[in-house]
Picture 1: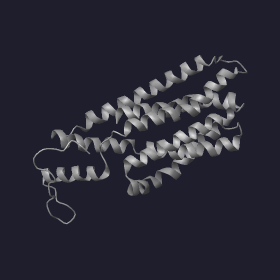
Picture 2: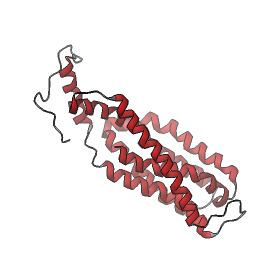
Picture 3: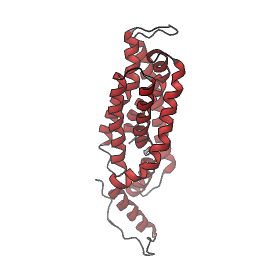
Picture 4: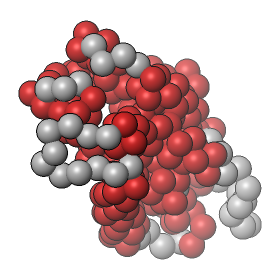
Length: 234
């Protein structure tokens, strides 16, 4: 989970690092950055309320993968899209929708990992789990900044120059478009190995309740699904 999110978030943070350059040199007006940010932010208020419905229908893991797939498609489109403000606003709104389908679940996966850790080891280590995950998020921000800097340098970006060479414009488009597409694809491929389906997680929680003598909704002791040894496959 940590490695997948490290890769996935690198693409997201690289977009944030390069959006100002995209507005200034691709769109030709740095003030248009605000419209890109507003479109992405507005999408949060639309996407987050519907995430539970997606999760109820297809599960957390598949919802995350749907969001990643959307980012791949939208990212490729951003690389080729015309420099038109209405097009940019609609595109980044769609980008925000798929981004939030995935990102709103990241901390849910983290909480699931705490339960899984207790199931496997008998010890509950929220502090260590959250600290490790937070560390990987910080690393992804650092890596994203490095990726943005190296890509701009490779493209021949000239700081404070009123106009940039075509290679620099291509690098900027690549950061904002192909960046989340490529890193989103890699992150999704890594996350395919994530073993906790929703059904498997419910079994784990039932087992933990049985170990602790916690009663279920009917007031009866939860039945242990495995009283001998934890099952390590999904």
